[in-house]
Length: 569
Image (cartoon, rainbow, N blue to C red; front, side, top):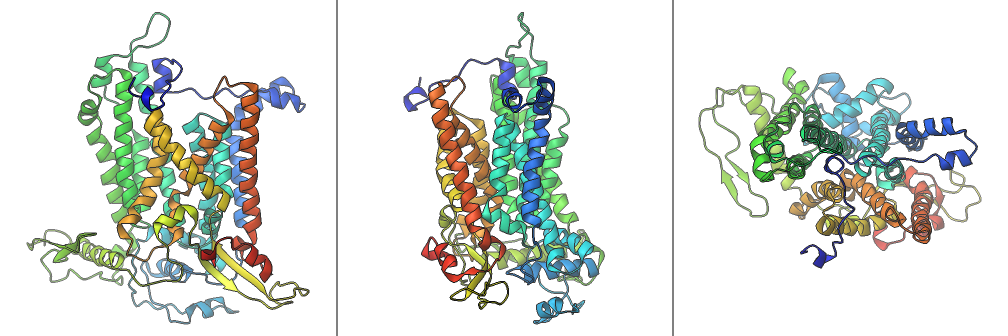
């Protein structure tokens, strides 16, 4: 009754088994038979669509991302750090040093690689750079080589979103819609064609979310299988099962811990996602036990599930992080590699506390029982932390996280102004051309996502829809931590970590536009038109900005027409 005061209108009665493990929507064959397929082939096609549909969407995303991947043939934006560090890892196992004119020497014909074994100071863990290095190992230190693996992960992430959306919404169509939206998002597209680290973080965060979803379904299926069977073949809640059943081995949660460790070992913002997803999975366990009949679901979760969840996620992620430094451990040339030699204490003397300006003093006691290499790594990490929290140098393209959802300040990775008849600029152009790679999300998609997030808050807060809560968790974990460091130099492209969750939110909202089961034909038609118009506008927006995502030369007037906001220039 209290929920009704806030607009909660209840939900159709469902069985306990269906509440624990909701069935997938049964897809009909009517459309395919109308297109000329015989009933048997249509039924087989529908059965295969769970994989065929996502694979086709991923194929489209891959074709877009690999098209002219080596263009522009230049070292753009922060590729100047990560592409070269990746090559150094291949050669030495740690990051070496490069001269100031290294980019020009790498791109000249024939190329030169002026790499020195002298260590350099780097402020990000190595997994993302090892990922880029895999493409360089196959195709050399070329623009195509260092962008190859981001394009692969960008394509695979579209496939992941299709499958995650299918499991989340129990609908292959909505899952493919979510993946299709990610395929045509400009920020994800640009990041998939650039050798930066944030796309790698996004991939492992998304993979971890998918693993936790599978684990959730399997754990709830075990609870449903253990419940007493009723006379009509259903199951009924049982307090003994809900409170006491142990859910056994959960390998998918171990896989999630590994993926979160790889995200954290690419960039440290993955640590916030680790915390958020760890809380999410135990709250899911409490909800499952409550549905199964537990009288005290949270106490039961704390007694039965919390410790196994912690062991499955946190230690696995930490061990993965440490193991990612293997190249630094097995060599002697890395930065701070021998710092602990002759030292007995911990490092540093104190740690800064965010937002307070205070420094927390650390105790000084003998630590010689810890291997020197681990103490050196600890010192290295504290120095990196101090660098990150103190990074306040102004930058032309920095932006406040408040502006990200409305695309307040995109980042220009590359810009040239070729003259008519040169570098692809049409000879009949009245003025010069503009050639730019702009890290800008597809505007219609992002602005629709801003409203979709409000709908997620409504669904989670007033309708108790766990799917909306899961999507919001992904957005919050990838976005809100940056508000703690508003004085730090930060950029819009950090938001690529939660772009898949924005696409899931828009897909779920689009599904609501189509109307609930049992809606009238008029309601369905109106909803289908509204959803179709939204999707077409998103696709048109991506096509319209496509030259700015790929660095194609366009007349300067056409470029100015695409600068919808003054802050985009």
